[in-house]
Length: 145
Image (cartoon, rainbow, N blue to C red; front, side):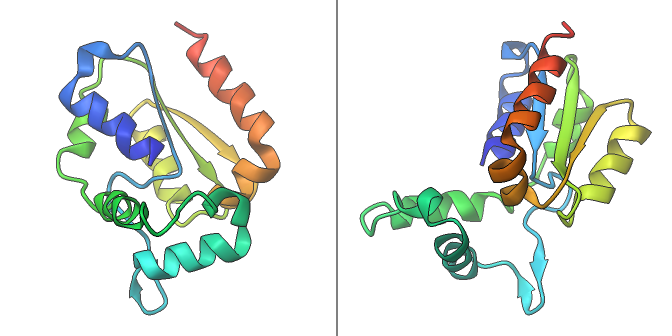
């Protein structure tokens, strides 16, 4: 959700930003497609609970509706590309090398003069296994200003 929120701030409150870091979310196409079509919340939460239970344990039945709404919002990309390209602050795009949007996001960054950071693994694996390196990279990027 962080990338989605960051793009929302860039779109609706651009003067509030000193820099913009978007990680792991493809703001050009939204949610990735699975083998059976668009990724669904059910498939996502099942995978999350199985592979990273410590990150999903807070999703209790009373919060499920809100989490599902947040997940569904990740497919909303209207105005996202324009918000990123019209941003007047430095922009960093980062994701894991095994993420579906890795190559397109790296290419988009290069074509548009944006900063890019690439880390091993997919988004979740990158955060769990390379979180410190990601933090250092983002801190270095933010410190440019």
